[in-house]
Image (cartoon, rainbow, N blue to C red; front, side, top):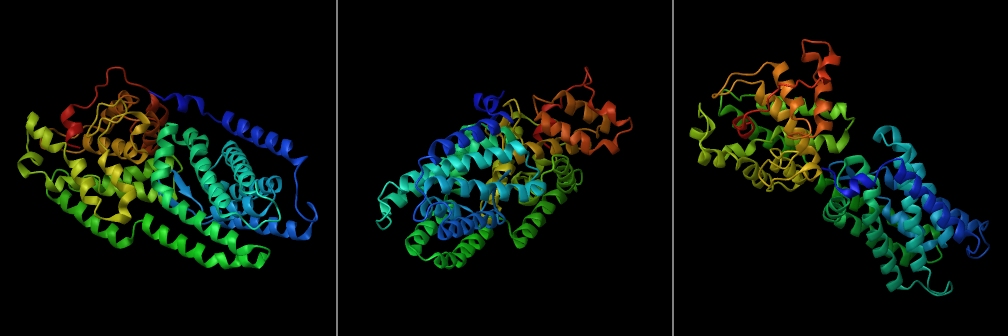
Length: 444
């Protein structure tokens, strides 16, 4: 089920190897490093390094949510300027110190492990060394070469994207190729704007350190613009929630379904210790996951018996219809794929695109579990509600086939107070449990 990259990229192995490579590269370079006029103790060099390290730390405190489990900070400008304005060895040390400090500051809030922090710090040391080596290929007495600056910026961005699976794949379980493609798609414009500002800043700074302050305003404007574009506005949220309520009201059997799925989704996220913009996006998607049913005819939606193959095909269009509707709202872009794929299965037998394993968006895997549980424990035209215990047995039986096992486990922990038996029995696999009938999954 797991791709080779997922099996290979495990913590703490990745953190240890990345840190070791960074230390070896620094040790090899430091003895023959040229630290500029006055050497490492030069007041000008020291002050500049401190300013840039502080810039890295501050920039990391203003993240922009680009997709589930991934945010980008506004520290790329400072990291690039570090590679440009400092000699390579000192630039790498400064970048590493800034990133390490920023990661330690946010560790409690993000729940990052020390291995994750080691990976992030080590890879930015190596990336900065690469970019600085290119930029400083020119003579130290020459003005900055625009071609070398642009090449250094491009290499820095490419190296960042290509090494990001070292950090994200152990956390999310996504294959490395998917992490790279989705990052390039989701964060390309934001990162490109930052590197462009870095190029302009490098050309403007020359010998005046104070000129770095001129970058504060454009960096702030870029942050505000992209944050507003990537994260959903309250007006859009209210409109979509009203539409979701309209769908629920069409059927007295499913009234309140989307609200209950949203509450169950929130419980899973709490168990997984996921919060902030990522959690907000997944919760918003859960609230509107069935919005595509607004286009399903009443005779199909309300049919008391088993659907015919033709009727089932109509019902199974609702994820795509919902995603197409939500695409009209740019600030809900992060939730569209969650809605589109909330009926996919872990084993690849779902719909509409038969995605498998971690190829199913993380948020969709969460909504799928919450949606299935509420569908099973609610009265429907074609069957009575199942007891909670029976629904739990079915979830356990489908753990690793229909649903992501990690999500199922988190969900079961989140509803332990709803069960009649003691919590330890929650994790027992019931041998004779049956998976939901197809009609349940199709009409959830």
